[in-house]
Image 1 (cartoon, protein in one colour):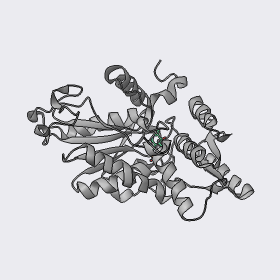
Image 2 (image 1 turned 60 degrees about the horizontal axis):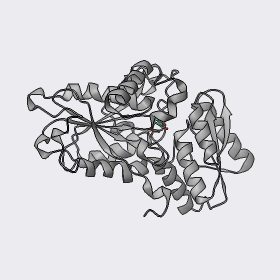
Image 3 (image 1 turned 180 degrees about the vertical axis):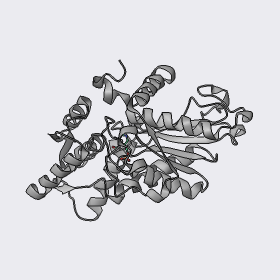
Image 4 (image 1 turned 30 degrees about the vertical axis):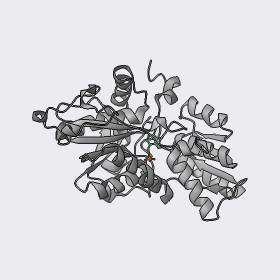
Length: 323
Ligand SMILES: Cc1ncc(COP(=O)(O)O)c(C=O)c1O
């Protein structure tokens, strides 16, 4: 029996359809209690603030987020008795707003982008003295992935070498924390960042506009460790959304826009690494799996690309993504 909903954070690594001669596996973060990868940093940032004496139960917390960090914080705030206000760009999906309210968080909608939400959150801090956890700067964000996401991946691959890690970038917490820990384990592994094609600030140095929810902050986050990146892939929204529909209809995996984008990028990377002569198993062909669902050791030599699907497709139903 778990002591709290917060103890259930953790997700499976699942093999997905892969180009011939390579394996792509996705960590499906929708399995977390709040339905996204952000449950990890949300809890970690609250615990770090409690340890540092900045927060105690009953205090007011405010955070600008594209939604998923807010939902993770709302769960932690409900379970640990904090008064939470989330500042959300009004372009974010209806599901995000409703979920936040369901967990008892206050929402302040701002027109514009994440940068506008950050400015408004700063004002609320100045006006009310609420504590802002600052996911774009807070080292606990990346550390959460270093301590939890990466070790879960290492355990799941059961000794197999990972050749590439492909991750979408918002705050940079997921790629920095997971990439750092996995590079310690697999020094030859490439870390590949994914960003929206029309807001490719990492590739071009110039911000643009995009309609991805969560991926593509429009600025280079302080938390992102640029030194860790071996290359960057950009993906257009339409291609990412087509891939979301394919993943749902062909593989039974219901995920959001940024997951579609990293899936597209992972397949590109896997094609470059592929060694067709190795006859690697194609998912969802179960013949390559052991009785307990692990990958059979005979495929150790197949190039392995690991990616992270940040959230659930249920969070996008009202946008028409799956219609
Ligand atoms: C759906 C989605 N994808 C990708 C990301 C990017 O993750 P990170 O902030 O760790 O870079 C986020 C962050 O909020 C997100 O909500």
